Each structure stands twice: as C-alpha cells, then as structure tokens.
Length: 401
Image (tube, rainbow, N blue to C red):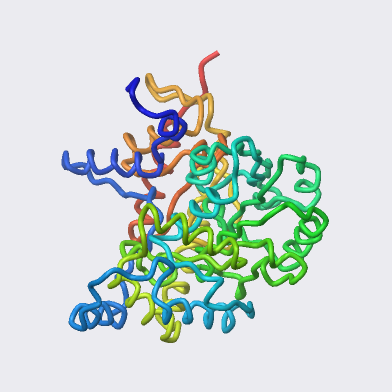
C-alpha cells in the first residue's frame, strides 16, 4: 500500500459498485436480493442496433478508429443535437469516448489545475467528486434540499464563486434525485455564468431521454455562454446500451481538441463495433426510447405511491432519470434488536440484510440523510421491494430512554 501513488489514494471505491458487489455475494449464497442499487435500464438493446453491430463485424469494422470517433458518427451526433435540442455544432466540436464517464473525465482533466474549484450542487453523481480528486481540484458543494427538489439556485451559485472557481458541474435530469432544471432556472444560471468570463459549465445530460416532463432543456441553448459550455451525453441510458461504452461531448473546438489529445494517449478511440451500433441508434427514430420512457414513468408513479406508505420516508415525485431519493432521517436513532440506525449507511445495510433490498446510501452522493433507489426494474419487483422495506422499517423501534 505504501508504494501506491498519491493519485490513487485520493479517490474512493464507488459505493454504487460496492453495494452491487455485496448484493452479488449474498445472492451467491442463495439469498433472494432485489437490487435497486445499480443505474442501468433493464431493457435489452434494440434489435436493429444489435444487427448494426453484427453487420459491422461482417464488414470488417475491426481496426483502430479515429481518436475522436468515426466521422459519420460525429456527424450523426451533430444532427441529433440540432434535431432534438436545437443546438448548432460541427463535427469539430464532437468527441466520442468510452462512455460518458470518460467524456466527463477528459473535460475535468484538461481544464482543472491543482487547487481549482468546481462548484457541484449536492446531491451529485458519485463519480463527480472522485474525478475532481483525481485532477487535484477542489470540490465545493452547494447544498440543496428537498423543498426545491434538490436544485441549486442562481443566487447560490453567484454567492459561491471565488477567484479560484473554474467550473460549475451539474446533471439534468439528475442522478440521484431525479430533478430536472426548467428553461427558466437554466436561464437564471446562465445570467450568472455570463458575468464570470473564466467560469465554465459541464452539463451532464446523459438522462436526457428518461424525462417525464415532456421536454429537455440544455444550458447550451443560451448563446452568450455557449462557448463555455461542455455538454456530456451518451448512448447508455436512452438506448439501453450501458455495456457498449459509447459517450460523447459537444464543446468549443479548443476543448474538444484538448480532449482528443488526452484521450489519444490513454485509451484512443471507442470500440469500432460499438460506434457503428451507436450510429444506427442515432440515425433511427426514437420509438424504442419513447417506449422505455413510458415504462419508466409508470414505474416512477408506482414507486412514488408505495414509498409514501413507508414510515419515515419523505420524497418528491422524480421528474426524470430512474431513481427516487427519499429523505430517511426520521429513521435515525431507531433500533432493531442490536442494530442501531445512526445514519443512511446503517439503514442501507439494515435493508440489505433484513429486507434483502440493495440501495445506495446518500453519503455516496453528498447527502447524509437520503438513500437512492433505482426503479429500473419490473413493477413486480418494485412492489415486492417496497413491501419488504416497509416491513423492515416497521420493525424498528425508538431508542429506549
């Protein structure tokens, strides 16, 4: 351990993956675990996308790809951004990466120097903090609460900016809260960004199509700040392609060029077969995506209804993504036999061991009072999971005086 670099010691193991591993271990012992910890669609990749991959193999798309991605895929991304988001980019603004996570990592690594601040509304996706740590930046969390659906305000951002502030990083739809920023809210944020010429925005839009409000808004639509906005997106969520590992960024050319330079040295381009599958996905209609979105909406409605019946759980109805993030702090201080629930981590382990339901404690997302449940699984499993959780919570008693 003493020989490990300071770099690797700066980052932590993903609590999401750690919980998934613990669930796997219990499942291997024959315990029926309902896994609500991992965020991936439970739908298979659409047939026409898989067929495009098979065709690509037969057509010998088996050689190195351009670092930034196949030109035709980058053009398809340009067309998607214009068609669906009314954003104008060229091929030179697009970089395809090995998942949206790499696109995000590339951006942070090429913009951040040691000690630079990144403003991150809390709760936030687990990897934001660790990628900032890897870049030796400083995460400056902006606390939000359930009353505003865990969204940061323009006033909060303005008050938090210092001479060291380099980036505002947020997601919409949000992982873990499921909240969505409206055009009006983004416009207010854009007004703040406009006043601070050295401030950049990373807009994580990977859940764009898992949206129950009817429309997606990107902060890149505001021309006054577009040259300082980096849009992160990918194929995993909208097209049920988590394992294909294709993400992308849309950014000013100098940022895109720098990300190509970095990516060229440590992974090169995304897989050739995956890129051709992504091309087929983007060039087809969104019927399959719309169908998934409707299914997730029905699951959202179901889990929100059921979670209201669990004592001590408070939540708003998520507007997007496939997570619900209830405040469970009313359960703290309760006991069951020798188990003392002091925080959300304790409660998460209690639910895993007692209810056999895996979830992720809010501490992984910068919020100590919440637990994240993924509803990217069938309705029957959601019903069973909520029944188990309710039963387990009802077994908790107040700490004796």
